[in-house]
Length: 136
Image (cartoon, rainbow, N blue to C red):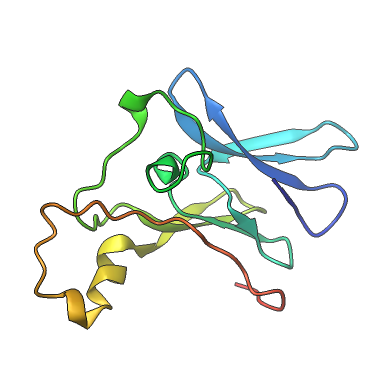
């Protein structure tokens, strides 16, 4: 759970149990108004504009108790470093979510690993934080 820039923005994860998909929730605790968008949050930027997170549905594969709780059959397994998983950014003003760093791209930034076969690797994103003075 994260506070946005003001007392009217609380940001946290939830699950749509009809589809078993993670949801990012923006709640105004003073009015009770809320909005849900697909995705998740690990940390909110200091200016309150953006939320960043790795795949919340996969996080428990790295450490139990993190991410969102889904039935096992709805928790994806990564083989190698996929193109469709990595670090996601959500604009809290528009609800737009985008993959800004695919795991495949992060892997290719590590030259010492380029000769490795990833057939037996399970690579996941996990910890993502903003520097206290950062903005997007």
